[in-house]
Image (cartoon, rainbow over all chains, first blue to last red):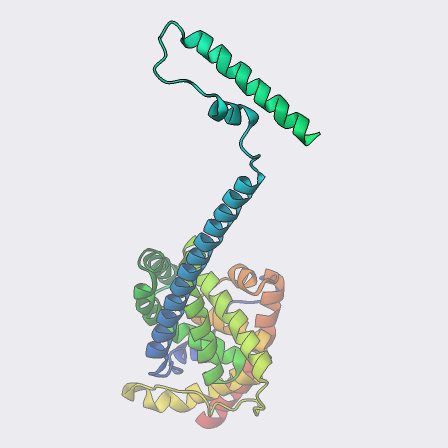
Length: 122
Length: 187
């Protein structure tokens, strides 16, 4: 690289050019314009970021709600065991010792009723 | 004026401040670099207004993404590269019709004690504008920014040999033009 350029050969011209370095100046408007444009751009970016965050929250909430609704819709109707529990009738005021037998009776009763229902369905 | 290393160090500090404080620190970076950036961009766009647009665009970009400058190995070289890219884009977009060597668009400042040199300054800027932009930018970066050919090569994304060659051609033309004009005036 230095084979092409000899340091001394252009010294005079280099000095001339160096002296003219500060001859051209930026206009007085440039500073306020640049700072104002930068501030406006930063405000815009902040606003945009806020909107993006809000949009992301809305989308997440929407997805969550949709998911919850789908789960609700996909959940099977109350299970047989659940129905069974609600259908088992206990007679109030039973003695503690009779309670197990009462349970057996109630379940037998329940089975009978379920069998009847099935028969009607068929 | 500060030496190239000292100046690069000050730009690094300013870049760190911009990164820490955001847009509030842009004024400091502007005050430190605007004269150099505008004269560099003016040599590429061949029009001061376009040069100022390029500088403004680059600085606004930095204000919104200050980490770009702070993360650069040499923030000053990075800033020059940014302004160069913007200047080239602006020049391509605007495609102004200008007479080679015309400097009517430039906003100049000549201190009173240098008034007798103003003609020489005008001749220098006019001669710089007659060069191809690829040569002008090398001359500016070498003489006014005090960068080495290798550093200039990194900014222009070309080899140091190509940079040296462009400098050689440019200086030959400038020597012929400026020194002959000078001798003509003296005789």
